[in-house]
Amino acid sequence: MSSALWLAVLATAAGTLLMRILPLLWMRHRLERRERDDDFDAMPQWLGILGPVLIAAVLGSSLVPSPSILLYWSATACGVAITLLVWWRLRSLGWPVAAGVSAYGLVIIILGL
Amino acid sequence: MTQPIVHAAPRAWLTGLREAIPLMSGYVPVAISFGLVATQAGFSTWEATLISTLVYAGASQFLFVSMVAAGSPLWLVVLMTLLINMRHVVYAPNLAPWLNQGRWWPWLMHGLTDQIFALAHTRLPQLPESQRLGWFAGAALLAWVSWIGGTAVGAVAGEELTRRWPLLGEVMPFALPALFLVLLAPRFTGLRWSLALGSAVIVAALLTEKGLSNAAIPLAAACGALCFYVVRFNATAGGKRDE
Picture 1 (cartoon, helix red, strand yellow):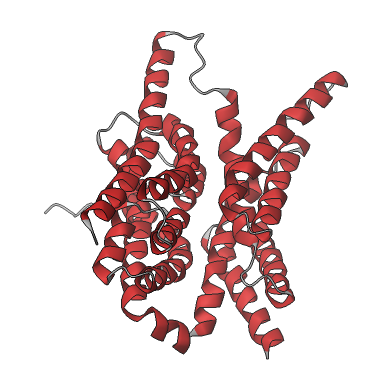
Picture 2 (tube, rainbow over the protein chains, first blue to last red):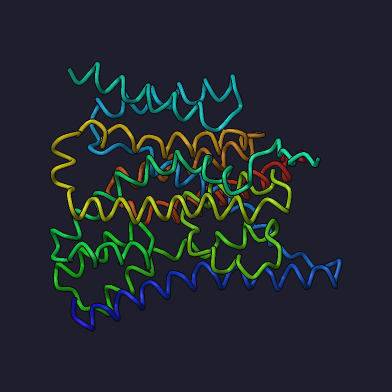
């Protein structure tokens, strides 16, 4: 790799790291200010809403199978249903994921034959 | 004779490791793909692995190597990569209320990916303060190491692996949406949140399906937030509220 390319990698890495660190330091400052001033709202409401909707967006994006064909969509639908069903029964983290992946795999094997 | 103290609860970092295992099954196949794509684009195994170690942001890494391979100007490569990563800006402030002033936290933010954010946003509030640093370190470290390891494996033997076990690579990535589903399901607590979250899921899926995967997350999140405010506006206008 040329030195210019190395610089590009380092600039990208540093920029990404700063995007992850600086907002934390900003929010820490706001939280400290709230301790001194009770009327100050440290967490803007829009930020509290963005957290869950970002997770929802990541979910939506990751639900789209690749390749986007009927077989994989059927497997996705079945995997989602089983994941939710097991979560509804157990309210845990690991088992619903394991059950969903198994259901997804089974549909691909059965319908793909 | 003194008896050794037996801790009934597992160590926090072990809990973090265990709870991040579903992420691993989603990370490794994608990391193997990245290693493969990077070597095909002319990067060596060592270089591909180092990019995964330092940048550690999936979608933008794919864009980085493909733009470099296409001969794009390097300033444009850096700019586009950073634009894709802009969404990370809102992650840490959302976690900040559950983090203390420890000096390790800023450095641990290197591990704050989409998936770790989703997991931490749900789990950190449920953990006692003394366990949060250990839990986050364990979860983030496992995800980071699996991403780096997967890249190295993909760069060395990606072609052979995908040829030998094609089904494994197809099935394991479903662990990611399944995990997000489990993290998100408890948040459907009323009409207002259900509409906001549901619209974000649908818009993100539609945009990704249309090939706009990089814009899907920020646009869908904005749409979900807008939905949240519109429902409040309508409920307030009608004289009732649905929180």
